[in-house]
Length: 257
Ligand code: 48F
Image (cartoon, rainbow, N blue to C red; front, side):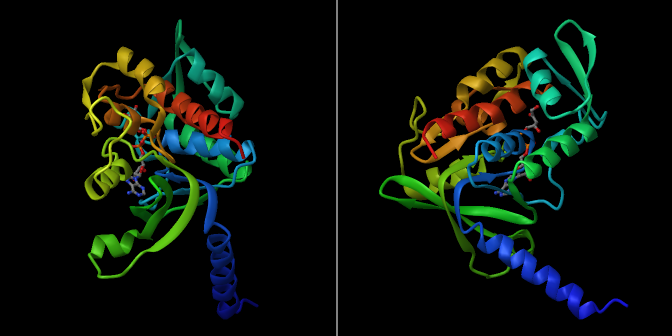
Protein backbone atom coordinates (compact mmCIF):
# COMPACT_ATOMS: atom_id res chain seq x y z
CA UNK A 1 0.00 0.00 0.00
CA UNK A 2 1.35 3.43 -0.95
CA UNK A 3 0.54 6.44 1.21
CA UNK A 4 1.01 9.64 -0.82
CA UNK A 5 1.62 11.61 2.37
CA UNK A 6 4.69 9.51 3.06
CA UNK A 7 5.94 10.01 -0.52
CA UNK A 8 5.56 13.79 -0.17
CA UNK A 9 7.19 13.86 3.27
CA UNK A 10 10.12 11.73 2.06
CA UNK A 11 10.78 14.04 -0.90
CA UNK A 12 10.43 17.28 1.03
CA UNK A 13 12.58 16.12 3.95
CA UNK A 14 15.28 14.65 1.78
CA UNK A 15 15.50 17.63 -0.58
CA UNK A 16 15.55 20.07 2.33
CA UNK A 17 18.37 18.14 3.96
CA UNK A 18 20.32 18.12 0.69
CA UNK A 19 19.92 21.87 0.23
CA UNK A 20 20.65 22.69 3.89
CA UNK A 21 23.81 20.66 3.59
CA UNK A 22 24.90 22.87 0.68
CA UNK A 23 24.45 26.27 2.32
CA UNK A 24 28.21 26.43 2.82
CA UNK A 25 30.32 24.97 0.06
CA UNK A 26 33.91 24.78 -0.96
CA UNK A 27 32.86 25.33 -4.57
CA UNK A 28 29.62 26.53 -6.18
CA UNK A 29 29.54 25.72 -9.88
CA UNK A 30 27.15 27.90 -11.89
CA UNK A 31 25.86 26.01 -14.92
CA UNK A 32 25.75 22.27 -15.63
CA UNK A 33 27.20 22.23 -19.12
CA UNK A 34 30.18 20.01 -19.95
CA UNK A 35 32.76 22.29 -18.34
CA UNK A 36 30.78 22.72 -15.11
CA UNK A 37 30.01 19.02 -14.79
CA UNK A 38 33.60 17.94 -15.43
CA UNK A 39 34.80 20.55 -12.91
CA UNK A 40 32.32 19.16 -10.37
CA UNK A 41 33.59 15.62 -10.97
CA UNK A 42 37.25 16.51 -10.34
CA UNK A 43 36.51 18.83 -7.43
CA UNK A 44 34.35 16.27 -5.65
CA UNK A 45 36.93 13.59 -6.35
CA UNK A 46 39.53 15.77 -4.66
CA UNK A 47 37.28 15.93 -1.61
CA UNK A 48 35.97 19.47 -2.04
CA UNK A 49 32.35 20.04 -1.12
CA UNK A 50 30.87 20.93 -4.48
CA UNK A 51 27.41 21.70 -5.83
CA UNK A 52 26.28 22.63 -9.32
CA UNK A 53 23.36 25.00 -9.91
CA UNK A 54 21.60 24.69 -13.26
CA UNK A 55 18.83 26.90 -14.58
CA UNK A 56 17.19 24.33 -16.80
CA UNK A 57 15.30 21.13 -16.06
CA UNK A 58 17.96 19.21 -17.97
CA UNK A 59 21.64 19.30 -17.21
CA UNK A 60 24.25 18.95 -19.96
CA UNK A 61 24.08 22.43 -21.51
CA UNK A 62 25.00 22.47 -25.17
CA UNK A 63 26.36 18.95 -25.28
CA UNK A 64 23.13 17.02 -25.90
CA UNK A 65 22.73 18.41 -29.40
CA UNK A 66 26.28 17.70 -30.67
CA UNK A 67 26.65 19.89 -33.77
CA UNK A 68 23.39 21.29 -35.14
CA UNK A 69 21.41 18.47 -33.51
CA UNK A 70 23.60 15.70 -34.97
CA UNK A 71 24.11 14.30 -31.50
CA UNK A 72 27.74 13.24 -31.81
CA UNK A 73 30.67 15.15 -30.37
CA UNK A 74 34.31 15.36 -31.42
CA UNK A 75 37.20 15.46 -28.96
CA UNK A 76 40.97 15.41 -29.36
CA UNK A 77 43.40 12.98 -27.72
CA UNK A 78 43.63 14.84 -24.40
CA UNK A 79 39.84 15.12 -24.19
CA UNK A 80 39.48 11.43 -25.00
CA UNK A 81 41.64 10.60 -21.99
CA UNK A 82 39.08 12.28 -19.72
CA UNK A 83 36.20 10.46 -21.41
CA UNK A 84 38.12 7.20 -20.92
CA UNK A 85 38.50 7.97 -17.22
CA UNK A 86 34.75 8.60 -17.01
CA UNK A 87 34.05 5.29 -18.76
CA UNK A 88 32.50 6.97 -21.84
CA UNK A 89 32.98 5.17 -25.14
CA UNK A 90 34.96 6.91 -27.90
CA UNK A 91 35.74 5.91 -31.49
CA UNK A 92 38.74 7.05 -33.47
CA UNK A 93 37.72 8.92 -36.63
CA UNK A 94 41.11 10.19 -37.81
CA UNK A 95 44.42 10.82 -36.06
CA UNK A 96 43.56 13.02 -33.05
CA UNK A 97 39.83 13.17 -33.86
CA UNK A 98 37.67 11.00 -31.64
CA UNK A 99 33.89 10.70 -31.61
CA UNK A 100 31.58 10.12 -28.68
CA UNK A 101 27.83 9.85 -28.52
CA UNK A 102 26.63 13.18 -27.11
CA UNK A 103 23.96 11.52 -24.98
CA UNK A 104 26.37 8.99 -23.51
CA UNK A 105 28.85 11.79 -22.84
CA UNK A 106 26.35 13.94 -20.90
CA UNK A 107 24.98 10.99 -18.95
CA UNK A 108 28.45 9.58 -18.23
CA UNK A 109 29.95 12.85 -17.01
CA UNK A 110 26.91 13.64 -14.85
CA UNK A 111 26.80 10.17 -13.32
CA UNK A 112 30.49 10.20 -12.42
CA UNK A 113 30.24 13.73 -10.99
CA UNK A 114 27.44 12.61 -8.70
CA UNK A 115 29.14 9.35 -7.78
CA UNK A 116 32.22 11.37 -6.84
CA UNK A 117 30.01 13.28 -4.39
CA UNK A 118 28.98 16.47 -6.22
CA UNK A 119 25.39 17.60 -5.73
CA UNK A 120 23.42 18.96 -8.66
CA UNK A 121 20.50 21.34 -8.25
CA UNK A 122 18.53 21.77 -11.46
CA UNK A 123 15.76 24.32 -11.97
CA UNK A 124 17.71 26.96 -10.05
CA UNK A 125 19.20 30.12 -11.50
CA UNK A 126 22.17 32.00 -10.16
CA UNK A 127 21.04 35.60 -10.23
CA UNK A 128 23.64 37.39 -8.13
CA UNK A 129 26.80 37.03 -6.07
CA UNK A 130 27.89 37.62 -2.50
CA UNK A 131 30.98 39.84 -2.46
CA UNK A 132 32.84 40.49 0.79
CA UNK A 133 36.11 42.36 1.27
CA UNK A 134 36.78 42.46 -2.47
CA UNK A 135 36.30 38.71 -2.82
CA UNK A 136 33.45 36.62 -4.16
CA UNK A 137 32.09 34.68 -1.20
CA UNK A 138 28.98 33.00 -2.56
CA UNK A 139 26.04 32.97 -4.93
CA UNK A 140 22.45 34.16 -4.83
CA UNK A 141 19.93 31.67 -6.19
CA UNK A 142 16.28 31.53 -7.05
CA UNK A 143 13.92 29.05 -8.67
CA UNK A 144 14.00 29.31 -12.44
CA UNK A 145 10.20 29.26 -12.33
CA UNK A 146 10.32 32.50 -10.32
CA UNK A 147 12.63 34.03 -12.89
CA UNK A 148 10.47 32.85 -15.81
CA UNK A 149 7.23 34.09 -14.30
CA UNK A 150 8.93 37.31 -13.33
CA UNK A 151 7.59 36.93 -9.80
CA UNK A 152 8.58 39.37 -7.12
CA UNK A 153 10.21 36.77 -4.84
CA UNK A 154 13.48 37.29 -3.02
CA UNK A 155 16.27 34.77 -3.52
CA UNK A 156 18.37 32.75 -1.05
CA UNK A 157 22.12 32.69 -0.55
CA UNK A 158 24.76 29.98 -0.69
CA UNK A 159 28.21 30.70 0.69
CA UNK A 160 31.17 29.23 -1.16
CA UNK A 161 34.93 29.63 -0.89
CA UNK A 162 35.14 29.50 -4.67
CA UNK A 163 32.61 30.16 -7.41
CA UNK A 164 32.91 28.97 -11.00
CA UNK A 165 31.09 30.72 -13.83
CA UNK A 166 30.41 27.83 -16.22
CA UNK A 167 27.33 29.46 -17.73
CA UNK A 168 28.65 29.24 -21.30
CA UNK A 169 28.31 31.93 -23.94
CA UNK A 170 26.32 34.49 -21.86
CA UNK A 171 28.86 34.53 -18.94
CA UNK A 172 26.01 35.36 -16.62
CA UNK A 173 27.85 35.41 -13.30
CA UNK A 174 30.84 37.54 -14.30
CA UNK A 175 28.40 39.88 -16.04
CA UNK A 176 26.52 40.46 -12.78
CA UNK A 177 29.76 41.24 -10.99
CA UNK A 178 30.79 43.69 -13.70
CA UNK A 179 27.39 45.37 -13.84
CA UNK A 180 26.71 45.72 -10.14
CA UNK A 181 30.04 46.00 -8.37
CA UNK A 182 32.07 48.29 -10.58
CA UNK A 183 35.13 46.08 -10.14
CA UNK A 184 38.25 45.65 -12.21
CA UNK A 185 38.34 42.10 -13.56
CA UNK A 186 41.62 40.25 -14.09
CA UNK A 187 41.28 40.69 -17.87
CA UNK A 188 43.45 42.95 -20.05
CA UNK A 189 40.90 45.79 -20.00
CA UNK A 190 39.49 45.05 -16.55
CA UNK A 191 36.15 44.37 -18.28
CA UNK A 192 34.61 41.39 -20.08
CA UNK A 193 36.48 41.19 -23.39
CA UNK A 194 33.65 39.44 -25.28
CA UNK A 195 33.41 36.38 -27.49
CA UNK A 196 34.78 36.26 -31.04
CA UNK A 197 33.44 34.28 -34.02
CA UNK A 198 34.27 30.66 -34.86
CA UNK A 199 37.90 29.49 -34.95
CA UNK A 200 38.08 26.05 -33.42
CA UNK A 201 41.82 25.54 -33.40
CA UNK A 202 42.70 28.73 -31.58
CA UNK A 203 39.64 28.56 -29.36
CA UNK A 204 40.45 25.07 -28.13
CA UNK A 205 43.91 26.10 -26.92
CA UNK A 206 42.75 29.43 -25.58
CA UNK A 207 39.97 27.81 -23.57
CA UNK A 208 42.59 26.26 -21.34
CA UNK A 209 44.64 29.43 -21.04
CA UNK A 210 41.51 31.42 -20.26
CA UNK A 211 40.35 29.04 -17.56
CA UNK A 212 41.41 31.00 -14.51
CA UNK A 213 40.47 33.38 -11.76
CA UNK A 214 38.74 36.46 -13.11
CA UNK A 215 38.22 38.14 -9.74
CA UNK A 216 39.26 36.92 -6.28
CA UNK A 217 37.14 33.86 -5.53
CA UNK A 218 35.54 33.74 -9.00
CA UNK A 219 36.79 31.46 -11.79
CA UNK A 220 35.66 31.04 -15.38
CA UNK A 221 35.53 27.71 -17.21
CA UNK A 222 34.38 26.50 -20.60
CA UNK A 223 32.89 28.89 -23.09
CA UNK A 224 32.46 31.56 -20.46
CA UNK A 225 36.26 31.58 -20.04
CA UNK A 226 36.73 32.31 -23.72
CA UNK A 227 34.00 34.91 -23.80
CA UNK A 228 35.37 36.64 -20.69
CA UNK A 229 38.92 36.79 -22.01
CA UNK A 230 38.02 37.65 -25.61
CA UNK A 231 38.68 34.47 -27.52
CA UNK A 232 36.88 32.57 -30.26
CA UNK A 233 34.04 30.06 -30.18
CA UNK A 234 34.71 26.52 -31.34
CA UNK A 235 31.42 24.79 -32.12
CA UNK A 236 30.86 21.09 -31.54
CA UNK A 237 34.40 20.10 -30.59
CA UNK A 238 34.25 19.51 -26.86
CA UNK A 239 37.83 18.67 -25.85
CA UNK A 240 38.48 22.23 -24.68
CA UNK A 241 35.31 22.26 -22.58
CA UNK A 242 36.09 19.11 -20.67
CA UNK A 243 39.79 19.94 -20.29
CA UNK A 244 38.75 23.36 -18.98
CA UNK A 245 36.57 21.65 -16.36
CA UNK A 246 39.55 19.63 -15.19
CA UNK A 247 41.85 22.67 -15.25
CA UNK A 248 39.58 24.83 -13.11
CA UNK A 249 39.28 21.99 -10.58
CA UNK A 250 43.08 21.70 -10.45
CA UNK A 251 43.52 25.46 -9.96
CA UNK A 252 41.00 25.57 -7.13
CA UNK A 253 42.30 22.41 -5.47
CA UNK A 254 45.80 23.89 -5.55
CA UNK A 255 44.56 26.72 -3.33
CA UNK A 256 43.98 24.09 -0.69
CA UNK A 257 41.03 22.45 0.97
O1 48F B 1 26.50 26.36 -22.62
P1 48F B 1 27.05 25.24 -21.84
O2 48F B 1 27.06 23.90 -22.45
O3 48F B 1 28.50 25.70 -21.32
P2 48F B 1 29.98 25.09 -21.46
O4 48F B 1 30.23 24.08 -20.43
O5 48F B 1 29.99 24.37 -22.87
C1 48F B 1 29.79 25.08 -24.05
C2 48F B 1 29.37 24.10 -25.13
O6 48F B 1 28.17 23.48 -24.79
C3 48F B 1 29.22 24.74 -26.50
C4 48F B 1 30.49 25.26 -27.07
C5 48F B 1 31.74 24.47 -27.01
O7 48F B 1 31.82 23.44 -27.83
O8 48F B 1 30.54 26.33 -27.56
O9 48F B 1 28.29 25.79 -26.43
O10 48F B 1 30.87 26.26 -21.52
O11 48F B 1 26.25 25.12 -20.46
C6 48F B 1 26.03 26.23 -19.65
C7 48F B 1 24.90 25.87 -18.69
O12 48F B 1 24.74 26.93 -17.77
C8 48F B 1 23.36 27.15 -17.56
C9 48F B 1 22.73 26.87 -18.92
O13 48F B 1 21.35 26.56 -18.78
C10 48F B 1 23.55 25.70 -19.41
O14 48F B 1 23.00 24.45 -19.05
N1 48F B 1 23.19 28.51 -17.05
C11 48F B 1 23.38 29.67 -17.76
N2 48F B 1 23.17 30.72 -16.97
C12 48F B 1 22.84 30.23 -15.74
C13 48F B 1 22.85 28.82 -15.79
C14 48F B 1 22.50 30.82 -14.49
N3 48F B 1 22.46 32.16 -14.33
N4 48F B 1 22.22 30.03 -13.45
C15 48F B 1 22.25 28.67 -13.59
N5 48F B 1 22.56 28.05 -14.75
